[in-house]
Each structure stands twice: as C-alpha cells, then as structure tokens.
Length: 275
Image (cartoon, helix red, strand yellow):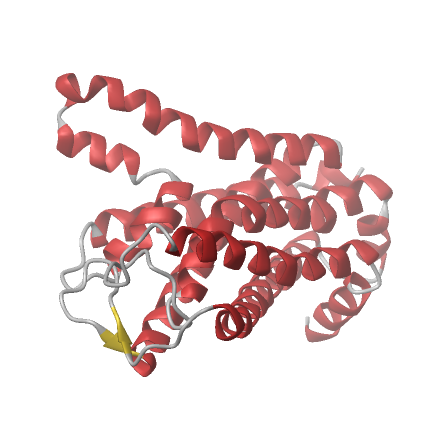
C-alpha cells in the first residue's frame, strides 16, 4: 500500500495543474491581505474583525475557505478520481494486482494529504503577508473571547482553527468523492461540486423565511448543517470561551464523512464498474 501511495503521490506532481493550484495560494493570501488593509480603515482596533499579524491567518482563511479553497478541493477530486477513470489510468493500476478498494483508500489518503498541505501553505503565506502588511500588537481580541490574547495563544488558536478547517474540507471532499464516482466526466464532477456549494448557501437562506414557523432553534440547526456556514461561522463558535453547538457541528461533520465516504467506496469498488 505504501508503494502505491508513493506512486500515486509522485505521479500527481507531474501534473502542471497541481502546481498552478498551489501557486494561487500566495496570490489569494495577498488579495485577502489587501482587502483587510482597506477594511481596517473602517474599523476600531479593539474589535475581532480588525486585522493584525496574529489574527490575519484566520481572517484571511475565513474569506478564502468558502470560495477558493473549496473550489480547489472540487478540482482535486475531479483530477484524482473522475479524470483518471475517464482516461483509463485506473484500469492500468488494477492490472498491477491492487484491488479497487485499495486504490480508493490510497487515493483518499493522497487527497487528504494534499488538503493538509494546502492549508499549511496558506497558513505559512498568511503569516508572511501578515508580517508585511499589518501591525503586530502585543495582544488582540478574538471572536467570542472576553479577554485579548498574546501572539503565542493566538497562534494556538489559529492552529486549532486550521485543524477544524481541515475537518470541514475532509467532509466536503467526502461528498465530492460521491459525485466523483458517479460522474462520467470531470466536467460533471466539477458541475456537481459547484452546484452542491451553491445549494449549501441557498437552503439556509430560504429556510430563514420560515423562522416564524419552525422556530429560531431549528433554523440554527439547519443553518449549521451547511458546510460553508460551518466554515465561516461554526469554527469560531467551537473555539469560543464557551463553545457552542459542539455536538451538532461535530455530529454533522462526522455523518458527512462517514456516509458519503462509505457510499463512494461501495460505488468505486463495484466490479461491474471496471468492465
């Protein structure tokens, strides 16, 4: 299995598309930095939205996670799964005495490793750009925290936020794996992925019109069943002084990962798929 992982990993980096995707990260981090430089002129320095070097890696990520990084994950799934099945490369791997289940698990491991590197690279670029563009005060406020934090505690906070972001991207990739295994073309996979993200923004918005009927509590659960909403607002709730909706958000992410990965594995492993 390790030999297959190394083979898949090295073969992946021969693709120019992967390099281009990673090259967009510094540019997107810089774009987020310029946005917050402009936003700071309209904010007081004692609010959590005010960007400084310590909190910019989180603020920048929250802006890019729902758009650019989610979009990159859509493309990665299309390249790793649908495109390789469509081109016939997966059938060549099967000839090398690996089962379809083994290939699926290795490809998932490669995908998750790429997502981890993607977040690591974004965080590194964000700290560098934050150092260049923003002030570095001794302490600064955080969302849903009473006391301000110093740079060390802020770094630990950012680390936790990036870990939670990784889990949300893993949940998203699980859903996309399902689309990737049922789609006949990479265009279809990308279309399904973008459609799912748009739907995830739309249904909480539509549900807001029914708050008088369903109640605010039920609406909150519906709102935080959406992965983009968890990414944008749920992560800071989980990291608050008094964490909120921990069981609901944790259970939602667990269900997404478990259910869709199992379904995708079953479809990918069906023998008649390779005939």
